[in-house]
Image 1 (cartoon, protein in one colour):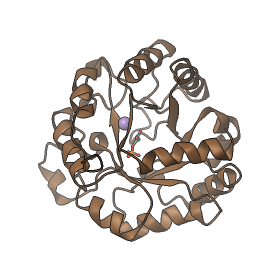
Image 2 (cartoon, rainbow, N blue to C red):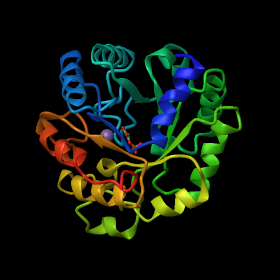
Image 3 (cartoon, rainbow, N blue to C red):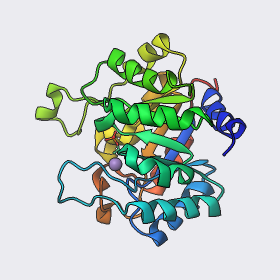
Image 4 (tube, rainbow, N blue to C red):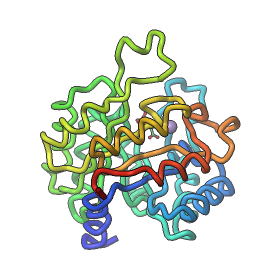
Length: 260
Ligand code: PEP
Ligand code: MN
C-alpha cells in the first residue's frame, strides 16, 4: 500500500464514524470468509479479526497465527475490505506487514515500548495506520504517550481506541471492564488523533454492546470496533461479548453526532 493509499484509509476516520467489525479471532478459512461476506454486505469497509491472540490463559485458543492472517487477508480481498489485526511482537512484523492495512496494538501491549518503537519505525516509510488500544489500567496521559512512540518515529496516522478499564465495579458487575465513555470527549480535547470506542471488550457482554455503542457515538467517537460472530455460542474466543449480525444492523442505524 502506498503512502497516499494509507493516508486515504486514515482520512476515513476524519469523516463519519468508521465501523470496524469482525470476529474476535480468525477460526478457519470458511468462518472468516463468511464473516467478510456478512460485514461487507452491511456496507462496512473494515474487517477485524485476530490471528495472534493475547489470551489470559496459555491454555486458551491462541489464534491460528500466520496462516490465519493469510485467510483474513484473502477473505478481505475477496470482498474489498481493509484488514485490522493485532501484532503481538515485533518479530512478527516482516512476515505480517503486507497482510494488514491497520496494525492493532492490543491493550496488554500498550506499554510495550519496544513493540511500539518497532511499529513506529516500520510504518514511518508508508504511513500505514496504527490502532492503539488503551491499556486497561493506563491513564489517558500514559495512553497518549504510548501513541507518541509511533508519531515520534514519523508516522502521524495513529488511531486511539478506548476499550474499557479495570475498576472496583468488576467485583460484581456483569461487565468484564468498565466502559470508559467519559474519556471520549476528554481525549478528544487532549489530542487531534481520532478516538474510537470498543463496546465489545469494554463490556464483555453482548447484551450491552448496542447501548454502549449508541452512547459512544453520542459522545463523539470517531468510530466503533465491534466483535460480531454468526455463532457466538461456539466462538473460540470472546463469544459472550460477540453480537450477532442482526444486532450489528441495529448499530449501523444508530444516529451519530458527526452526521447531525
Ligand atoms: C482485540 O481487539 O482483539 C483484543 C484482544 O482486545 P484488547 O486488546 O482490547 O483486549
Ligand atoms: Mn476479543
